[in-house]
Image 1 (tube, one colour):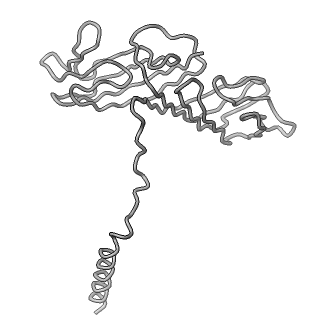
Image 2 (cartoon, one colour; image 1 turned 120 degrees about the vertical axis):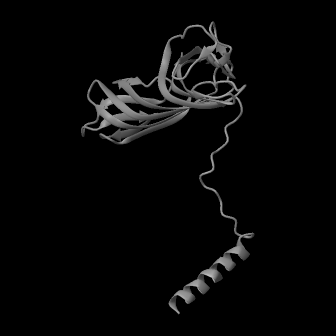
Length: 227
């Protein structure tokens, strides 16, 4: 009898849920937010050093040494924010036009000379304009982000003008590279150039695997935000 009652109760609940599902839709809270077109996003681990009496370039975070009670004297947008070891220091803003930076860090160490923040940086670069080649200028901020990419045939590597053209007996075939266009598994593929008037990008990638219809890449992106 016990098992039969549970079966009847379960059936009743299922029927009630089935009747009410059209009026009580279940939201998907973890659905990714779509990015605007022509936008690059990088998530990078970061360690930032701010010397006493200076701003972190491109941000409104300043360090003014220790407080009278021995805390780190940090100013965020001009407001005093005393911090101790492992306390959060977060900031979001635009170090350059069309470049949004979100810092999520904690105090790693501090003394009378400087403070070190460690955590992550999220970069969103909008209105990307790709200009391959050239050399970087003087950076105010620099980040190194891990990169993994899955491309279809005839798809462009984000931030470049390099296109995967499919598999050949010589290896993966790329359009838009200088010189020899073929790479085999674990071979390197590099790119340098601007993606914004104030952002220089260097990609150091490796061919993870490839087929006639798809390509997997892994490596790092070095992003320099310039003066």
